[in-house]
Structure formats: C-alpha cells, structure tokens
Image (cartoon, rainbow, N blue to C red; front, side, top):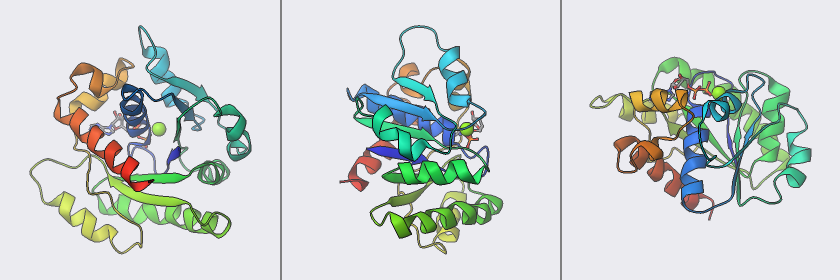
Length: 209
Ligand code: ADP
Ligand code: MG
C-alpha cells in the first residue's frame, strides 16, 4: 500500500506523521519504505540524526517522476509512505499520482483549513485519472482539553473529504523524538503520543481494506 502524506502547506505535520506512521507499521513487522519527496529532505535529516539500527528504509526522491519510478523502487516493500513536498505543484501531483491513499494533515486553525483547498483541488484533478484514489483529513496538533478539535472537524466538513476519527494532539515528545531520529513508539509504546499514532495507523488500515 502506498500512503501519501500531502498538503502544500508547510509545518502541518507531514514529516512527523510520515515518520511515526512508518515506525508504527514497521513495529507490526511490515517492510516499510519512507520516500522523502520534499526537496528539503527533512525525513532524510531525521534518518541521519538516528543512532543505531534503522526502523525502516528512508530514501530521498524529490522528483516529479515519483509516480513512474515507485513501482520499481517499492517492489520489495509491504508499505510505502510518501512524505510530500510543500508548495511545488509538480512534485505534489506526482506524489498524489503515486499514492493509493492520501492523508492530509491539518492543524486546527482557520488558515490551515482554508489552505487545504489547494491540495483537495489537486487530488480531485488526479481522481479523473485515478478513480480508486482514497483520501482523508487527519487533524494534527490538536490542543488537549479544548473544543478546537471538534470545531475543526465541523469546519473541514465543508470539503467533501472524509475526516479521520482519530487525531494527533500537540505534544512536545513529537519534536523531541524528531531531533534524535526516533519515533514516539520507541520512547514509550504506551505513551499517549504512541497510542494516538497507533489509532491513526489502525484507522488507515481499516480505510484501505
Ligand atoms: P511538515 O512536514 O508538514 O512541514 P513537520 O512534521 O515538519 O511538518 O512539523 C512541523 C513542526 O511541528 C516540527 O518542528 C514538528 O516537530 C512539529 N510538530 C508536528 N506535529 C506535532 C505535534 N503533534 N506536536 C508537537 N509538535 C509537532
Ligand atoms: Mg516535511
């Protein structure tokens, strides 16, 4: 299965969710490849910061030919996660065409909800050629104990895009683990952060069945 984390807005959590979902799939025993399509190469930086055994393979491929190359590159993996690029439309289009399922991380802010318009349009274009392409929003950086999470779901419902029931809270552990090249699961599999990632992973697996 090829899962693209896409949103042309930067800082929404594409890389954070890519890494932690890849780790979560790898912990299940799946062979996982993380394809870094962002020219900034943040997932590659994450892998370089890591000490010890890799959790999964990470490869940089910031090219608009991802959709053509992925069959060959991904043939030895059970799951491929594509960490999508900000802005660059050609790369985003190629990443969308390469994916079976697209997860669009959005933060609970009106700006993020408006900005999602751009990626939703690209996906709708791609669906003309790729009818089976699935896609959904996932809320990231929800602030605990606020109603914003609920409000954001309401605001997002103006798009006709499914919204994951599970979401990810704003937690320092995501930034801390990023700096060490680790996943939140490795620090503590029972932590709230790890359990939230697990829930998104489970919803993802259910979604593609
Ligand atoms: P993108 O790849 O979409 O640009 P990133 O995953 O790099 O976004 O996230 C942007 C910044 O926000 C990073 O510093 C990351 O550590 C932080 N971040 C992302 N998600 C969370 C979260 N749920 N809680 C805390 N920090 C987060
Ligand atoms: Mg990124």
